[in-house]
Image (cartoon, rainbow, N blue to C red; front, top):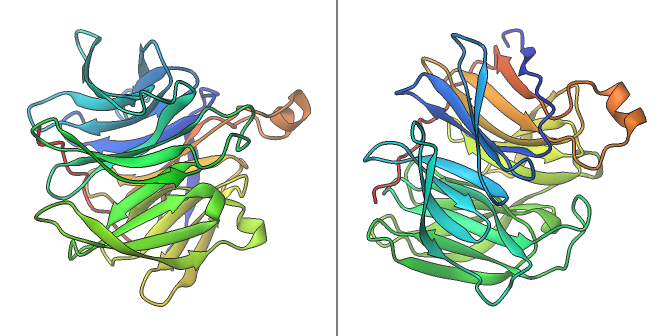
Amino acid sequence: MSSVRIECVANEGYRIGESPVWDEKEDALLYVDISGRKVCRWSPVTRQAQAIPVDAPVSSVALRKSGDYVITLGTKFAALKWKEEQVTTITQVDKDKPNNRFNDGKVDPAGRYFAGTMAEETRPAVLERHQGSLYTLFSDLSVVKHFDQVDISNGLDWSLDHKTFFYIDSLSYSVDAFDYDLQTGKIGNRRSIYKLEKEENIPDGMCIDTEGKLWVACYNGGRVIRLDPETGKRLQTVKLPVDKTTSCCFGGKDYSEMYVTSASDGMDKEWLSRQPQAGGIFKITGLGVKGVPPYPFAG
């Protein structure tokens, strides 16, 4: 084991930092602040974070093959032009549920944008249950709903052989696997591969490494955990100096650095004084594994 180092690279006090994605072209980390309503980009060169304000909760961001980005904004899939700071709606979901918003999203190996919804929270992790659904935006800009009855649609990724889709509905306290068809984007045969332990708390964002192991950020658990999806065993725990760790991705030149987002929403003054880096972006080095570069949306 090499020595694991954790550094807060952007101590910006984001309300709900989420959806970290490495943008190789820009040599920068993309992410969002959901309730802060901004899409952010942090540069390891300048060590500065830029932000583009948007007009609704923005829950995920992804690369786009044709350039710039796609985002989930309120209950819309939308396009974001960074330089122009311009947002264009692609399509809307959950029109019959005005209290819903998108949550986590990620692009699959074929360039489709998977993202799920949830009811707006009254306070962190407190919400009307079973209101969400999981959707896919295809490259022709059509949308398919996979299933509903979701509480908090969260972390997602695909196995290295592209035959399994991994997914987290946070309040099930479980990491689930589905059979996945790369050709069609269809998923089926849902099963649980890992149940979180009490001190791990709520499973949130997730990513996969080049050894096919999953990394899950544990909300209110102050950690990321590494899981073996084949055996269902936890292999490693990395604790962070904040409780509300929300998501993780690999980045940097060779994808050997892990970036972890966090939140500060729902923390009182006393709690914040104990965790002054709450809502910060963290970089973890020395894990000894690398990540898989993100796929761009093909539409």
